[in-house]
Amino acid sequence: MSTHPWLTTMPRTPSGVRLFLFPHAGGAASAYTRWLGLGGAALDVRSVQYPGRETRSRERPLSDLVELADGLARAVAADGADGSPCAFFGHSMGALVAFETARRLRELGERGPEHLFVAACAAPQSPREPALSTLSDERLSAWLVRQNPAVAEVLAHPELAALVLPSVRADLTAVEHYRLVPGPALDCPVTVLTGAQDTVHGTDVTGWKDHTTGDFRHHEFPGDHFFVQPSASALIALVRDLLVPHLGN
Image (cartoon, rainbow, N blue to C red; front, side):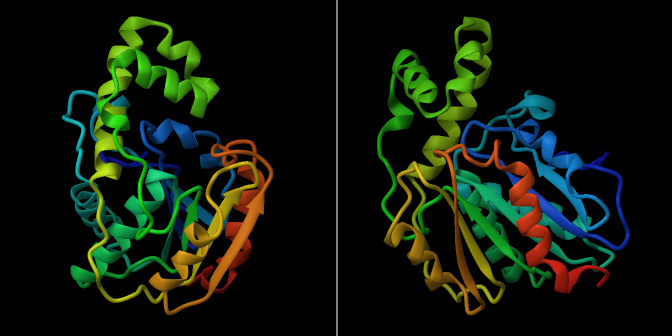
């Protein structure tokens, strides 16, 4: 496993592409536990761990998305000191963090991702849903359960909810306060992944075209905002197929 606090990894496959997985708001590295074993020989999977949860529970959650991206860019650069290629996969808030991490790597003069995969996330210039971060604990918990019923059991326990909600608030604050700063487009391909029953459609999807000079793709999967979990195997297969040109480099 990685000794870097930002990253949780499987043993390295020297010929593989490093695939960094960025969790959704309120999520942690464990959201991708199943994914860590799906990369096979082609992918060296690294799940991102934000401050304030799981192995970093004693740290203060960050409520600034660009600050998150800065810490991650430095971790990714250190992880790739051998020059091996990488790709980013971000879900919901994680897609914005992945996008900003790619931009920050460029600012640092470091090698960026060969491909950016963004799931269940409107383009960076799209308006964000306001005021969720200021809801009472009760109303915020109810909203979270509506978004992802799988968290209902955790939030039903006050002691567990007290551990989870501060990180959720910090993440929602980061998203609500995020404003795209104009800058050069990325040069890597961008693939947008959406759930057929989610609310990310239309210009929220096509707006991602503005942020790359490379190829743009859109793939739709069955499911809602959290389609990435039941579709994990199909998503990893798609990622592998699109990263074939970089395998072994």
